[in-house]
Amino acid sequence: MNIPSLEIIEPGPLATVQDRGRPGYQHLGVPVSGAADLYALRIGNLLVGNDPFDASLEITLGRFRAQFLRDTTFAVTGSNSSVFLNRTPIPTWRALKARRGQTIQLLQTELGFRHYLVLGGGIRVPLVLDSRSTYLRGKFGGFEGRALKAGDVLHTGPEATEPLPARYPRHLIPPYSPNPQLRVILGPQDSAFSQRGIETFITSAFSLTDRADRMGCRLAGPPIEHQRAPDILSDGVAMGAIQVPGNGQPLILLADRPTTGGYAKIANVIAADIPLIAQALPGARITFKVISFHDAREIYLHKEFAIRRFLAGDEKAEA
Image 1 (tube, rainbow, N blue to C red):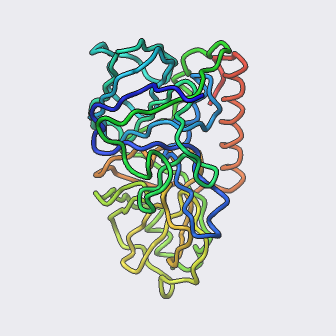
Image 2 (image 1 turned 90 degrees about the vertical axis):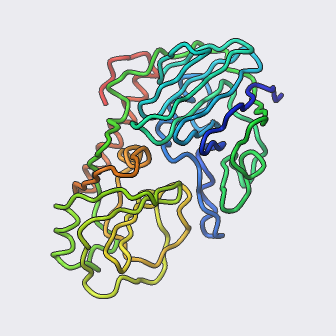
């Protein structure tokens, strides 16, 4: 049963329906898509009692307003934002209740790029290749394959009946920063770069340019020197892969990345730090810290265990 739950009044610069994406179809040339900040999407869903990766709204740069069409459990997650319910400020990263007829508003801020409005029951749009995510370049998935516009009505499934967890602990929220340091694992083609190029990558600060979208983020800084040519035989690219084309300026690939790429990849951002680059605004100062695969795995497992302890009722779970 799908229930009319939210009507868009002002969609802002970009609002789309996103879930986990559609992994498993890259060999057919279909990008994964999905939420740019999967952590924020996942926790929002857990707070309102949904499945972890149910579809929600990804709202870019605020200026968003919508009206609830029924009493609804909801949560807003993502980086710092100003959120209002009927003009009253409300907290983020916790489950809240809206009454039918109330309006929710997200203002544009200088502290974050994307926010997630998660509705109890999850947004119900048609499944395309096992996902409800919007792929804008392909014009499929999500709400008619497009960004939301004024007058669109979103439906949800039935809400959970189980008691909801408490407000998400602040110390488990990713350390969103206007100038993030990203932990990376070198490779898989770090041998394509000179030693001086590797040192430039590790020791330099790069500026996030305005060429930043759901596909990836272009950085500007000291040129990273290749050993030889920048091109490789095209191979698959993962979320957070850092390509370096011939101009020596790195490019971090995100949710709508292509399925393959022909530029050497110097490193990959670890999963725990993807939210930091997904939320960084143009002009941000980006630096990198190389860690081992073992350390990246330990960071990932520690975070997963913290989420499980929180869901089990331990609000003091450590990140």
